[in-house]
Amino acid sequence: MEERFLQVVADSLEVEVDEISMETAYKEYEPWDSMAMLNLLMDLEDEFDVSIPIEKVAGVKTLADVFNIVNGK
Image (tube, rainbow, N blue to C red; front, side, top):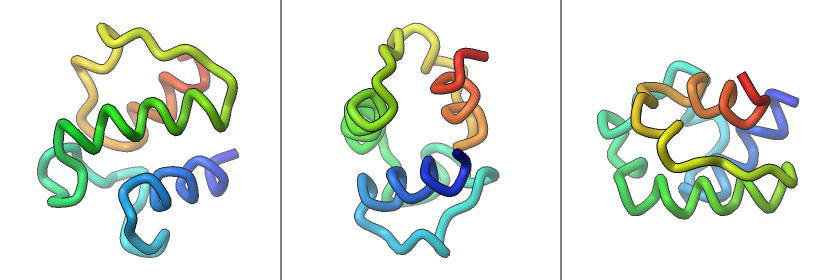
C-alpha cells in the first residue's frame, strides 16, 4: 500500500518516486505547494476510492500524515 501511495504522489507531483518519502514535508518540498496538495488529494481519492475531508488536511506536515488520512486514521 505504501509503495502504491508513493507512486500516486510522485505521479501527481510530477517527480520521480525516489525523490520523495513518507517524511517529505509539506510546503518544504518545492513541488508540493497548496495547489499541488489539492490535485494530490483528488488523485488519491480517485486511486484509493476514498473521500478526504478538507478539514483533516489542515494538520498535514508530511506525506505520512496524508497516508494516514487515506487509510482512515
